[in-house]
Length: 129
Length: 170
Image 1 (cartoon, each protein chain N blue to C red):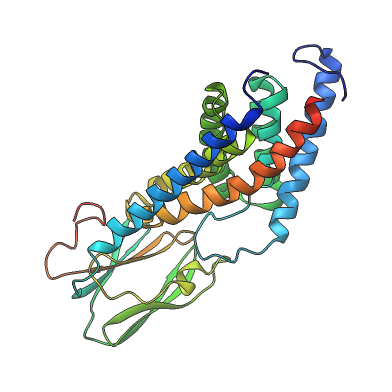
Image 2 (cartoon, rainbow over the protein chains, first blue to last red):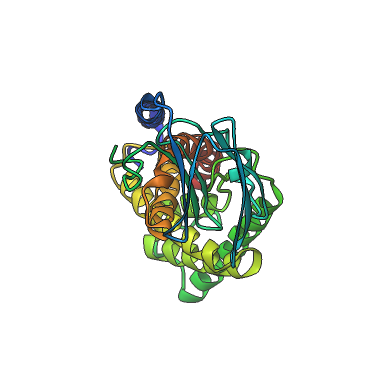
């Protein structure tokens, strides 16, 4: 029981907390930095394979049915969002509209990835840009 | 539970205590299913059941705590979740257990710091599985939020853990 009480451990705890929050803040900054380029297409992947590739300037309502569930994806005014989904968490529906290259909406329970891409490079991952 | 030190328990008492702790952890898991997730980030939860792992690390042998953790995850997965819940929880639980154990071993941190480590690495473990399941790096866009939320929920659990540790040490 040498060090488990006392003020030193509390100091270390707080340094650790501050460190994690700092790392999170830096990562937010890095991820949001590339958000300025408007994308051209929305690239939809279902269960690890390509499902659709729709130009952003064409307003579309797309109903995606799979054995895991249903999502309704809307392309409107060069923005993309998930209008409705029958997954329990509704995270994809609550997600903000996406329009910039690299922005992504993920519906984990349905294994659906919706991603904005530019003219070339539909194959690049969010990380490798 | 007044005057108990490491390794002083008979095998029977040890088994009974393990069962008791699994039961408590299961109740925590159940309570957590009743709390709606307000924040739209996958995997965000308070981690009440981690309170058992956390305090266990300070009073019991790591192997026993690990066993309690695995049994709790599998049972709660069958009762309140699904197969995929078990996979995600196992990944999060095992990764967070390893890092909490290491954090405790350094003797630098109180239960608060150990719990913060656990919260963050639980979310990182789950995110890792999400990347594997989707075979994509796309889920990593949630990385900063999950680190932040893990630190916050870990602090919350850690403060309670600190009180328990203090009370139990007397």
